[in-house]
Length: 191
Image (cartoon, rainbow, N blue to C red; front, side):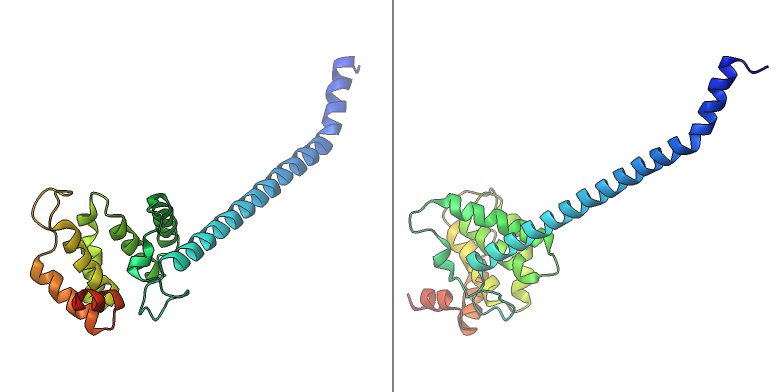
């Protein structure tokens, strides 16, 4: 004899496929929501990277760079006329984000390095291996940056220890940059 409890169990069993389909649809809906969120996040990251690259290229484009995507910014023009270094720090942050987000774009590394040298914050000596490597590759800007590091640090104690760039190395780098046509290096050599 069928008791009310049995009838309830049997009716629940009959509804199981319907409930399973509903739960499956809900799980599918959640997966599509997750995929949509991921796609939106990816699009936002790509847009942020594109904006960082654009800002870095416009604000710190290296003179004499054959891969440059914007008109060159001479080294002296990196410094804001109102001496508000927050603008330069913001540019450094954008260039760092661009460099880390697109490591295949080598120009972004040099753009970031030149902004860092311009900021002259403690720890600049840690960037010298990167600058030297690029300078050895023939970059006039990297050679000028070696001179600039020497010029800035020869009379201060910002970084403990010996001078990060010797006088001879700095002069040789400045002459290489000038010989390659680097405008700021040429102006410095003429003084």
